[in-house]
Length: 206
Ligand SMILES: C[S@@+](CC[C@H](N)C(=O)[O-])C[C@H]1O[C@@H](n2cnc3c(N)ncnc32)[C@H](O)[C@@H]1O
Image (cartoon, rainbow, N blue to C red; front, top):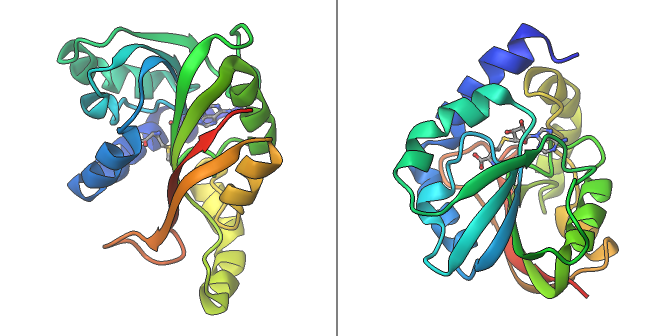
């Protein structure tokens, strides 16, 4: 049960916070190289839509929050890329094996309860050699920041819809069977380090 806060308030907060212009250059970078049929898990309010490259034929969006999907309407109307909301849960995708060319996840693997299950599903639906483009926050490289992340995680999870601060995202991606081709790890500018220890990269499905 998500409740009024999770269903109605939080998607609006996420739309505003994630929509801050500071994330635009990261969205542009992570979307570069997407092509063909794209799977996007945790589509949110469609903040990546303006950054889909011309080589994208269509997007299969997975997003549980109806409010997020409604907030995406204007961005979708301004885009020539067809986007279909095909499902609600990245942990169980209603899609055939090998049916997508590339996949995208931005600041979502922190929130999906079983992110490893979602990554296994992404791997299943990506064709062999297909790429997963990701920018995600997770466990910081510095021990002092890590200590704060462990302290604050229970509160963060309650306030931000189950968002974890300490996930080791690159390890989770490789454990799911992907090979990481490119990766950049950095603290996001203008964001507290506990929340902004990002990994941005591209991983290849076997
Ligand atoms: C912090 S938001 C990021 C939204 C968007 N990707 C962006 O960059 O603005 C995390 C998103 O993950 C979605 N989410 C939560 N649980 C999910 C699940 N099981 N499967 C797919 N998406 C999920 C949330 O509804 C929310 O839209």
